[in-house]
Image (cartoon, rainbow, N blue to C red; front, side, top):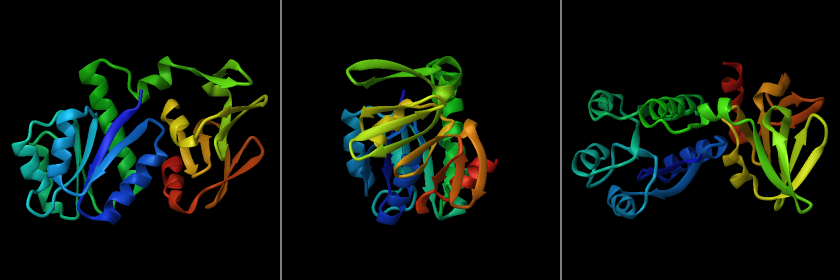
Length: 234
């Protein structure tokens, strides 16, 4: 099940960084972005989300004030360039505190904190649980619903409105967009390029900073996905 999230930050560049990070994680779904807490508050009155990335330093209403004065349902990950706000943030029962500039590796660690919290408090399946309890997906290909085991998938790539699923035996093509398809995969699948998703459990070698070897095939790493290498190495 996708983790629905929103981003609230008055800096367009900061929003873009989080958008790029969210896009790389299969079970994250970016629902909306806002440049001020007031608009986000109105949105939350009518829309249910799971996770809020909230900047602290914003004009008129700070992220801290927003938390204290709003009945917020989603869990919160605070983002800021100022380390001194960390203690106050944790006193407000947030999931995590991200110091800008936010690397993908640190961002991914926060997502795992949310997954762990969600698993222990709600009893619902998170992506980490799905790694254990769900082992396949069904895709529509040539008017047939085909079952594909996650363990058999090497990598996935996209061509316009079609997605190709490369398995250890064959390649299955389905009409879909990689941005929506990525939400159906467990957390050990990572997006390493705008057109590629890899099964990290099938990596044969990291041949360079720009290439991953999977099943004898070289998969490029996109320029905005370089931090993926750090995550794979850990």
